[in-house]
Length: 353
Image 1 (cartoon, rainbow, N blue to C red):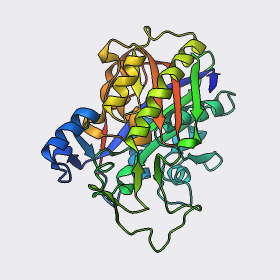
Image 2: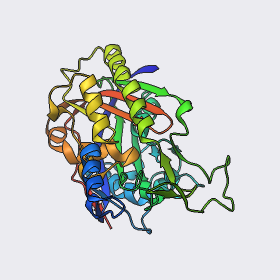
Image 3: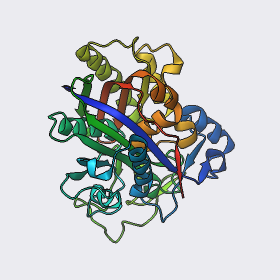
Image 4: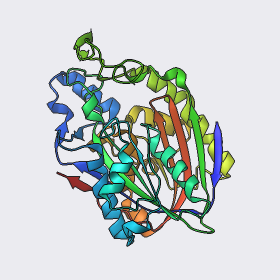
């Protein structure tokens, strides 16, 4: 695994936004009452936010970015780089970051690009952006992370449809000489590529005659090759195999202790996975592992910043906080970050119409 220290970078703020429409697990008629109870008990997901057709991923990220610029008193001209992490871009071409650059009124002489990662994407985005800023030539950067995951799930597939929600976020990083280091662990295993996948639509399998044909995979799972498929058991096994040992190695590399960490913010995949990781790390204080998935589901690349905003905004706004962030999933790809924040800007959650 890659273990990296990045110096002189300060997180200045994080903001998040969700659609207004709420969809409850109990209202999903593909699940029986018993199945619904078991699903909620296992995943922890009671409701999600679902974006209407006219709202794109960038629509979910732009309002948080604008709010963050306002809160920080940053002008658009001060932003030196913008990165967007998403697996549901507005268009296949061009990348969504250039759309955001234009809509936010940022300068033309700055880099703007996308990162195609999901569950691990927010931590990877922090790594890439902080790497660009650490030299001091670029001073201020924005990381947008969001997904409209519900656009790739089939209502008739009970293995995916009730899991995912839509959300967007914006995070501001700044070069700051002498700031506390950020420590990263970055790992990949492409042998797991088939575990979470949309089969058709890329250059490997283009749009074909049977791409949109709905097929029954097994009872209760009907989808096309343009819909997301996932193997929950394989994801669970991967997470238990890789996440805790990788974070243990990261803590050793950073010479930080689990005991001195205030919050562990995991990707909100499902509660069973996260609780298993918590126990493997021997984190006994339940309040140190916040959850947002009960009300928002699995929001892919936005899940970590959404959890920061909705669950621990008060300490983030008012004190110094030692954080461990951990994203893991599609790819397989997983990453961890240890960082210290100090009274960052963390405005209330935005609802996007």
